Length: 115
Image (cartoon, rainbow, N blue to C red; front, side, top):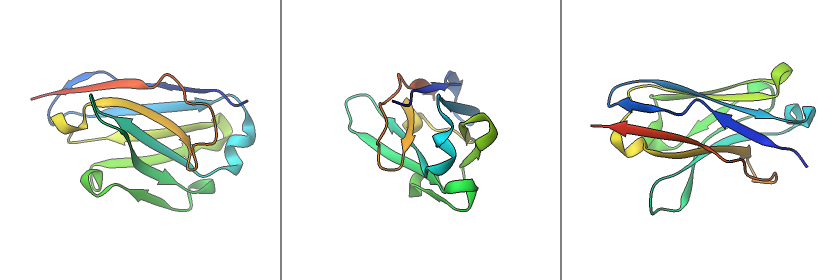
């Protein structure tokens, strides 16, 4: 089973930036479309962004479009999420997985945006 380890979360002020990383334990990573999700306090986990194999395409939730950028480095089995112009509504635990959520979820990384 592939393990996922997310990192990079922190407490930041509104308007700030963070870069999240997610490392997969197996190089099957390169054969998968990857995605980021987040779970806000008291809410369901929601999809944020998807990146295709080799980074060929990227899609975003409307509320993060223009502020977040997803990327990947297949040599490092890593997917990134650059988050700029952060808002308090971006607060939550961020997770990565295949677009179909086929791997075991990692522990996530906490992002807290203060107003």
